[in-house]
Length: 316
Image 1 (cartoon, rainbow, N blue to C red):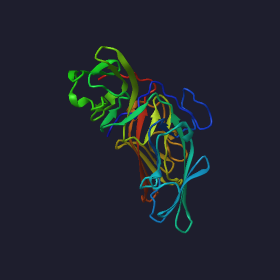
Image 2: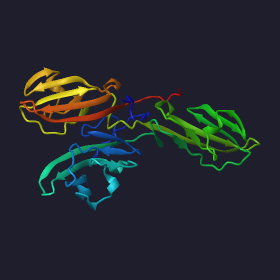
Image 3: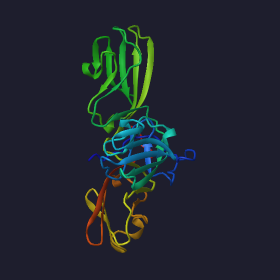
Image 4: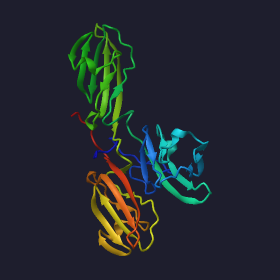
């Protein structure tokens, strides 16, 4: 599993739905989405094919489907499991997201709520980790032009007309755009393209800040802050609750009897509290719930990535 935060930003700014940005996490935020990227608000219940699904943002309906019948929104607005897909996230998308699920007979299967905050990042473009990506050159090259690409101030490609001085022919496309293959976190940073005529006159310098998105991440926690991994099922007083991180037990309780961990490690609803979050806390979190008779009430999993508060971009 990839143990990297989804985005590197020079300063972590977290905004609540109803207040302006501050430099510390807002206690109301339950999930964090990076501005400009894509994000999925998870639906924590398994849908039946005939179920009715409705999504709201700040109390306003934004998606509605009865079985396979679309009433509001588009098919691609939700994933196969009913989770809400947000694309090209903006600050206007912050707020309280609610999912309501009903059977075909109109009986409620649950209401699920999440407060989403959008982080203002310095990123201008986002590349998926492990994939290929092209940084476009916005100037039209002449055959005699000189082209240079830099990452974080260091030359990575240089060509005078058809003569390659640094890098390889396949590093750029025909129009001079920079090709990145098998993208890794080390490729994040500030990319600059410089174009000159054969006489050495500048035709322009073009800059882009690239961030790399870890596709495995489902939730993002700010380094140094507190975070809650939600338990999507309602606990009974006699239930047995167990939390694991990367397969290792970190909390266990039978009814009111503490077996592993501390009382304050979980909230009243059984959600896992993480304090003073560090990179070591990244990983796959699993909650298992059983009745006092040992009958499973469900296993719930989330992949958590930690975002650094202030990480300087470096060239590998």
